[in-house]
Image 1 (cartoon, rainbow, N blue to C red):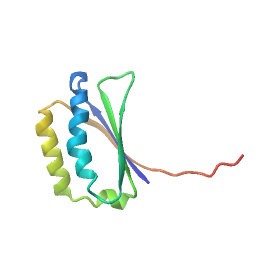
Image 2: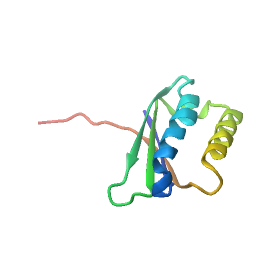
Image 3: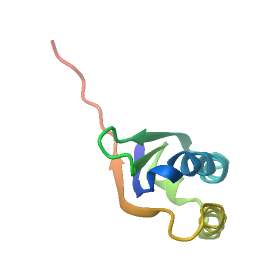
Length: 104
């Protein structure tokens, strides 16, 4: 499994709207593609302007198979709904999930 981890800076007053629009546009667009396993939104308890989106993919190939024009169109719709300058992507990381067997 691959984790796409995105951290955004969003004014507190726009945070709930950001989460709603993200679900309507981004999650809906990504969910159409094979390999999409789910998405979580994490809110920092000590920083109300921080929103982290954690997207689970079956593989890096599945994630990277989404056409660029689909991603660009989703971002354009999202930016239009949110309004100019209302959010900023501050960090983007890809993680490979690896599990180890437990020994007692």
